[in-house]
Image 1 (cartoon, rainbow, N blue to C red):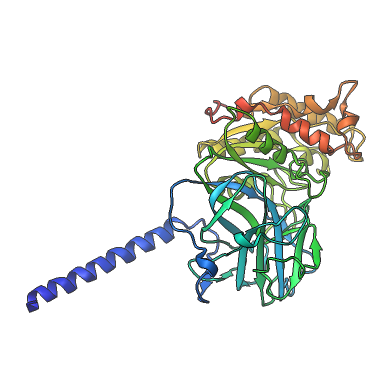
Image 2 (tube, rainbow, N blue to C red):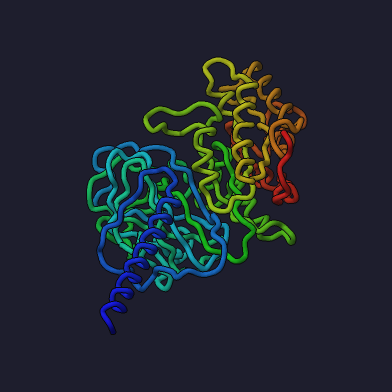
Length: 441
């Protein structure tokens, strides 16, 4: 080769390298969602070559839970030296999986040296199906550092995830970091173990039990059999605080079953973004705010989920119950309309629920009942949502319509029991859940 030709070859290689680096930089910037970015720590390749190659399909939500706050008692050391094995329940099948881990309420960086995902060996167990154990990686590295207020999304792993399955998401942190970002009313038992037991397939080391989900906020799957994601957005009525623990009887769970079993129904992954005590307009305490108001968290918990087509909103009762004075129906419905406008800007259809009765609950007053009726009148008029599901009419006592029907009442006169959650899911009109466009509100 002549010197000139050698120079041309060298110049071409430099240009190609610049183009590749530019494309990589663009991809990183384009993926930035505004939260502090996690950093990866080299530590060896993935166990069993679990990182998945690119393949056809659409990423959809199979499970999710909103981060609610910092777990009490974990502010100084977090869960250093312990493995956390979260049990989550899928609503959509897929051939690849990825996990989102959150340090939203941490006051210091969270270092995770190992994380894994596997199908559970059965219901109510910390044991994993050994053939499905996959080590999670983050940008190709087995360790990740998630800054305070940030989150990390794992690389995709090759894992055939069925619908209606329990999946184990396990993390291990060797160093102090707190508070732990958690979802307190999971209605699901998860597990903890001393030491790094992330890839244990047996459950014997997992002697600790917890009613919380910790760190994990989403499980997405790559599916070629899905029409997108449906998000259930609400308060304790959606969170399912009175559903039977471990039975997956919250109304979004029951709805996911309806969609799987109904011919012609849209094939949605259903994810539950309910937070107990959540309001449309008011935050909880702290910085960042715990139990963040609906209009504040909508971007993260709805728009941040993959391929969302429809959101079902059941929110507003806590604005009535927890307001020290009297809730303003104009302000509450104005906040709900703000959610709808945000959804419409992203091409998402919004189905809204009427507020169910609560006479007999300690917070009920005639004045609050009038506010509930006024909000429901506006919702039924079609001036708030694209479509309406009338939970109030479906679950109220026909002989005392300001009360829940006793058959659906958990006993506190506010929250439904399992039968009530089933009725809520059955009340939703499947045809209204199709991606049929947005109303002119």
